[in-house]
Image (cartoon, rainbow, N blue to C red; front, side):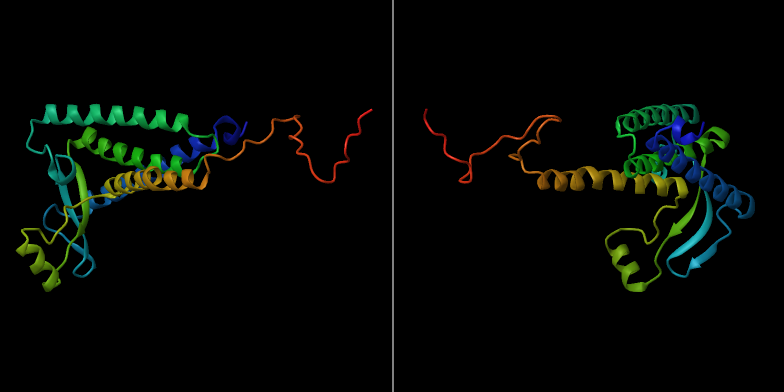
Length: 212
């Protein structure tokens, strides 16, 4: 029996997107981990804007919880991951069988959670390598005057998938659903049930009924 008959479209999209992104995340992290020296090597992709580096993050985004004791920190992360996976699976379960967009969005979020969870399970830290920064003097000066860094904290493919997935999810539910509801008038007449004749309105073409 083909997979399309075993699993609905939403499940195949959800698992497929998650698997591809997790694979890409782990491959890129492995290449960086094995080929770049942590905190020393740097590959400029777009001069003054984007570079590949090697950083190990023991915490969450921007280093949150990084200074907590390892057992407590890892325990919090793994509980969060298990809860997140359960919630995502429940949300996919409630989607229409042929849904693709929301299934792909939830697959991105799942990949973000699992990709970094694998790192923590293997080496207790997460490999980050994408560095976005600016050396443009006017912008860098403006950032420094407002006590902001000219470098964004390093991140990875899993982080990107998580941010994109959550962003698309919020756009879908905050804006697209409202627009769809606005297009459906509240006072629209419901269609006739199958097999039921539509109501017949009298018209001038109807012959008058003569009294007997």
